[in-house]
Image (spheres, rainbow, N blue to C red):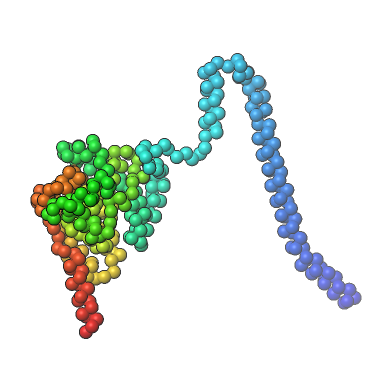
Length: 337
């Protein structure tokens, strides 16, 4: 008797253990059948949907054969059909060459992505370019446009739309000018820093065509600010010029660079020079400096550079390369001791 009960209990446990093994198979089969039925129903409805619409039109008395429709009725029907077939996401037409229209959420993503990239990799030009355009709000660009419209030279720049390249400037001619001219100062600075005016990429993400030109003008004139102040393109030199640009032009991108870029400067002596030497210089220079957006740089290349600085109110800052050299010699001397 005990043996029989034991066998029954054993068989019950085996049945109970094996039961869950078959349950998932049954469930998966059921899910497959439901999915197949749903797919078949969708396909069948899409096949008979035109017939249903036709039957409804006949029942309501609104159906009219195409050969009996007027031109307006056919155009209205085609318009309704085109609206129903219109894709959910469409890119607006560009407003100028190289323009890439962006939606608001795309501009927001561009701003956050380029901000992080520019902070971590300030040497990557694609991050700097994208951050500049994603922060170029029409409000600030319209302020620059108003400045240009209120000045005869600014109006001339807006009318002629000059594009700064090595060909339009004729760098070979500028290199033969006397040493004291602005053109020669500019070319010597280009050769010393190893840069070219042809490296400035066109504006792509600003929607208004005229505002895009104004930002492009600001971008192309950046090297003129470097050359007339004598600041190099090392990181602290770029930050110092950004502070000067922000105070003079009120470009948000320049202000962001002046505020946040020093946090990524590792050397203490570099931060000291920025805060104690070049930021005070930028404030002092910006107070009496004319709006640089209204300077037609291409037309003053043959003028004396010191006269240009005096006319614009530009103060030459302390030689950054010399200060960096002195700081480097002190560090080496400290290591030797």
